[in-house]
Each structure stands twice: as C-alpha cells, then as structure tokens.
Image 1 (tube, rainbow, N blue to C red):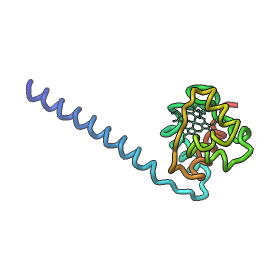
Image 2 (tube, protein in one colour):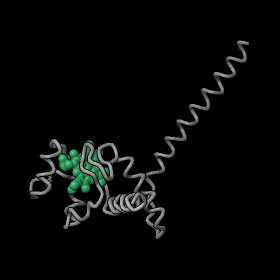
Image 3 (tube, rainbow, N blue to C red):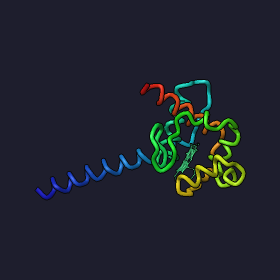
Image 4 (tube, rainbow, N blue to C red):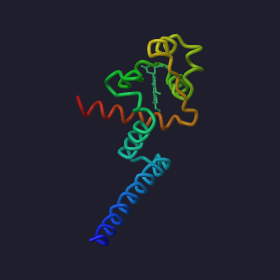
Length: 136
Ligand code: HEC
C-alpha cells in the first residue's frame, strides 16, 4: 500500500515538474521572432507579445488600467511618436500635449519598453486589428 502511494506521488510529481518545464520552454520560445512573409505567424507573434507585455494593463476594446488599444493608430497621427511613447512614455509626455493628458487621466503611470522594436509594436497592432475584426 505504502509502495503504491509512493509510486503515485513520484508519478504525479514528475508530471507537474514536466509541465512546468514545458511552460518555461514556451516562454523562452517567444524571444525568437521570424518576420518572414507569413501573415498568420506575424499575428501570432503579436498576440504573444501583447499577452506577455501589455495585457496586464490594456484590454483591446475596453478601458482597464490603461486605455483600450483598438483604433490606436488613428489617435496617433505621428507613428514614430507612438513608437517612441511605447518605448519611453515619459520622454513623449514632456513634449506632447495629448500624451500628457493621457498620463494625467490614467493616474500618472508611465511605461518603459526600451528594447521593443518597431516591428514588434507593428505585430501587436496587427493582432489587435485582427482580434477586433473577428468580433465585429
Ligand atoms: C503597467 C501598466 C501598463 C503596461 C504593462 C502597458 N501599458 Fe500602455 N499605458 C498604460 C497607461 C496607464 C497608459 C495611459 C498613459 C500613461 O499613463 O502614460 C498607457 C498608454 C498606452 C498607449 C496610448 C493610448 C492612447 O489611447 O493613445 C499605448 C499605445 C500603449 N499604452 C501601448 C502599450 C503597449 C503596446 C504595451 C505593451 C508592449 C503597453 N502599453 C503596456 C499602462 C500600461
């Protein structure tokens, strides 16, 4: 009886450990981004980037901690300024009235993603558009 209990513990313990490793691997794989011409893959990359980096504060079509992100490019006529804001919002808040207003409205939270590339931000926006068009 004791032996069976021990065997069961061993088996389930291993399963849990294995699952944990699997999750770690999934997260590690996120770093490898291939911007080939496969649109579906680009959208998947955008989804992973969004879920890992932005979803804790942003929903797509509802305000949460931060503003909703649908139609975001329409609110920022200057795309380079938008990239800059995502990488280092404080820098843009100092020189842009719209950014300053947002910052005050949403409780003066600034965000910094110094290493995020324009292509990665574009992938996030593509995912947001695709998600939005799927529910409309
Ligand atoms: C810690 C919470 C938090 C995280 C994480 C976060 N944001 Fe934000 N974001 C905010 C807040 C709060 C604002 C409102 C402006 C401000 O306070 O600076 C904002 C504003 C924005 C805006 C401007 C919105 C508008 O209506 O013009 C964009 C674009 C944006 N975030 C994109 C992103 C992206 C992309 C990511 C992930 C890479 C991200 N944010 C991660 C909190 C966050």
